[in-house]
Structure formats: structure tokens, C-alpha cells
Length: 199
Image (cartoon, rainbow, N blue to C red; front, top):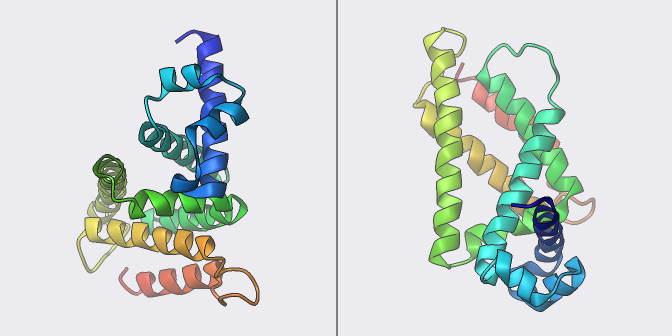
């Protein structure tokens, strides 16, 4: 893809992430995305044939930004095991999602939308993360660095479930003072305190 086309595609995706995050899937019109991204509707449809394809690409773009940001703030110290890495990743995730509240909406809507293509894309991403995290946990168990009372893939699913809980709490503003009383940092500490009992 030529540089100029790549720049337009990036601009469209950044704009789509902002609009989907603010207006939601159903509140975001393709014409609004084209206008805000300063491209013609024809250009927008050349890159993304419809709103569903744009949403899937925007969710992927936002998720990649999330992963890059989370990994960039991990301390360079050596962690004792994969559980400690997971704890640091979830704390970074919690901080990022709270600063980028629109992303919580995109992630939550990707689960809530009934469209089979969006759901399939979401499930595939979930499976990839479970497989990767499960493999890391398994490797630590084989090396004797980590002792879990269950299947590593189940623990990986539990990690992702907790990440989803944080996203939904942020989406509903439950983490804001005087709204819901949900403190993600306290919840993470409690979660990992319970998990460490499985070590």
C-alpha cells in the first residue's frame, strides 16, 4: 500500500476509534467518519466496504494500540513468574482503559453486538490471547516457577474475564468517585491475592 494510502487508512482508523468510542457502533455513521477523517465517502468505502468492516478494523487498531501501550510501561525488571507478569499487565491495562474510556465502549460493544462476523472476530482474538497466555503459564509450571491448582488455559480465561470486568466497569463509570464504588486497583490486588493462594 503506498504511503499516502497508508496515511489515509490510519487517519480513518484513528477517527473511527474516536467516533465509535464516543457515539457507539449504532450512533456512528460512515458519512460522519469520512467527514471527520477528511476523506471522501468513496475513499472510505475503498478501504472499508461497510460499517461492520470498519468497526472490526477500528477495534483491531485500538487493541494494537492498547497492547503496545501496556507493554511499553511494563517495568524492565525480571518477574518471578507468569502470574506476576499477568498482574502487571492487568494493572497497565486498567490504567490505559481508564485514560482511554472510549476504548472500553468499543471492546464492550464488540462483545454485545449480535453480528456474527464481529462476534467471530472477537472470539478469535480471545482464543489467541488464551492460547498465548496459557502457553506462558504452562511453561512456568513445567519449570517449577509457578504452581496452579488448575488448567493454565482456565487461568488465562479468568485473566481475560477480569479484564472484561474492568472494561465494563469503566464503560459504566463505576470507577468514578461517587458513582459505583468500584476501585480497579483494589479489585486487582484482591484478585491476585486470591490467585497467589493457588501458587
